[in-house]
Length: 375
Image (cartoon, rainbow, N blue to C red; front, side):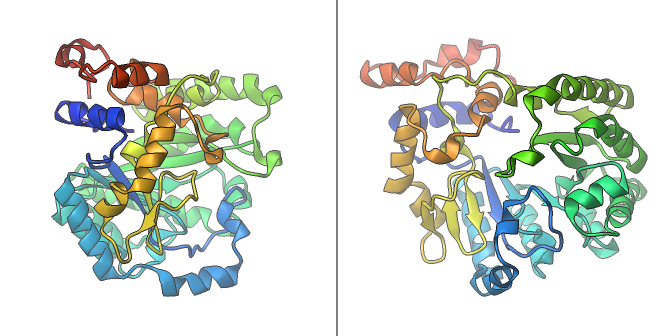
């Protein structure tokens, strides 16, 4: 996830955390280039947006030129990865392949999350030719009836199935290892019994990894209840065993963290690592927040990232004062495991003590000796 935080970035990163300033670049930036979508997924918050508003939002989408300028800026300040994701369905933008070529031209890692319906032979060849790093197909069930009940549009399962299989075949035909192909499954009440089937589907179409993701929805009927957890964990364990057998990567450990006991004495590193940039240029701290830190339409990304509003938010995170948008999120627990030294520095009192002790925030010997630094 955030394992790309390398040794040379660790000291600047934690100095930034310690000082509550954003002078180090984000590791990853998520682009949400459009609100338009061809599906109507039951768990998606975009269902609350009227179709007319989505259509009108095209007028406010950032231009191709602004995206290219921003990609250049992000590469220049040291960002490592661009994740092109919803919003809506990114392949609905006619210029999306041009933006992806720009990402790779600038030497950045590229991740695309798509429902896969609009992939065609030309786009797939482009992905392989440019050396795009990862394509994540949003697939929530291994069977057409369950998938289409969740995704809301009949006839789409076979299209996505064939596109995943063709991308895998094309990669082999051209002798390439990229892009890595992943299926992302939003786990909810209607599909948690089919996790083993997801791994089997991955094997059939040549997918490299399956990512199970916790469902976030205001509709409680979609969510896995406590009474479902024993059965859910049983299916997750079976899926993990099958993934090991097929040499398919699956994030069973990560998803189990979401059901663990949430610490009341921790911070979250997201405001230092991975902001979202929406179709209209608004920057939010993470995928759960709609609190706008600034807009890149008339300002540089760095101005917003280093701005007073972002730094005040970081300060509140450092003190363990989380905004309302954090209340249902367990990312802080996950990040404490995936960020180097995250467990060691996850408690606010430790960082506050360091801040006021007038000592260096992080001794180099601690970085070298700490067993979790293997990224």
